[in-house]
Image: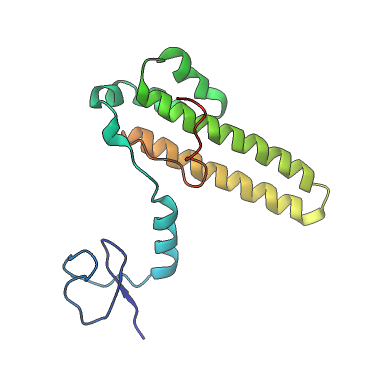
Length: 159
């Protein structure tokens, strides 16, 4: 049985539908049948976007500061160089949360290191997850987006 999903909203459709019953988009081309992995990734990366709350000039002027926020302790640079920028501060907060997560992950890896293979698996998993979040944050900052990082981005330390 062929399972078909709308390419725009992801709603499951019957294979004979020409318009999505969820969003009304026309169903054209080859159907999106890779429902498990793609939908999981899309749901994971679909986080709140507050870009519209920021001034576009602030975004353009401070993209580099926002990008630096995701590179380990460099989240401090936007706080020192562009303290007036709400966009840079938003990404500095995301970077700070990521930094704290990676520190906690490092400690957890050391704790689990005493267990033969579990420590290695935990360390690799935390490292890869941190890298994925770092890249996601850098891509969002580069594109001028103010999107929360998956799972950890909802926490606010800096206002």
